[in-house]
Image (cartoon, rainbow, N blue to C red; front, side, top):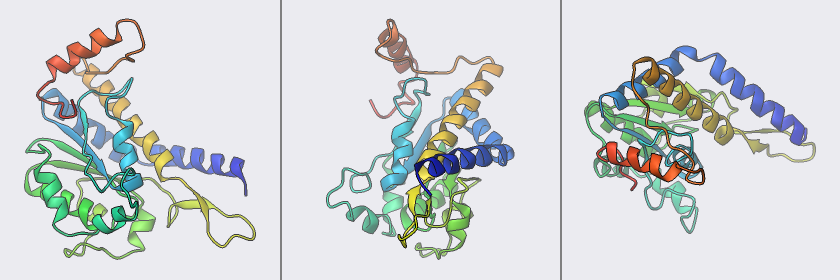
Length: 245
């Protein structure tokens, strides 16, 4: 297998993950749109590479201004040594602290991305969210997650804790490409598939807001004429729902 095989695997996986989960994706888009319409908040979180999805959809041209990333020091890819991220995401008690310190409250939506879904921090955040009346959406790999044990003391994996579960339909271990002579697979799919799914959720959420007669708070490129002025109006209108400024 080679690079072109990888591209086909990724595009096929995106198509399958979207077309075979219309009910889950509709539920997720409806939850996001409803939260924004009633001026509740939307958050997204992931550990290490899973956190790339949080970076993808906040303060983004063509994105919803009110999607708030949760960036915790020690969980992001600028952590050194990077191996610290693996230790911290397994630490019981830390997810509760992250949840409590990031403005997440009743009526909000929390999107959690974890490929294996087994580590303590995202599981604990989902449990805290449920106790506090927050709707949870997870993007995970069901095949992978069902093949591993939970690392949180509750004994549950992320898909067992969330209201809406979206499967990235990747392979166990994430990497998908086999090369003769190499025992390990290469070419992970979770980031590419995950960013496609979460951007599709944004688009479907915007469509619902428009159908409800709401002008969605979509950002323009600051490099387009009028972009700065457009964005400033949104930042002012939604200043109580944006926490990254």
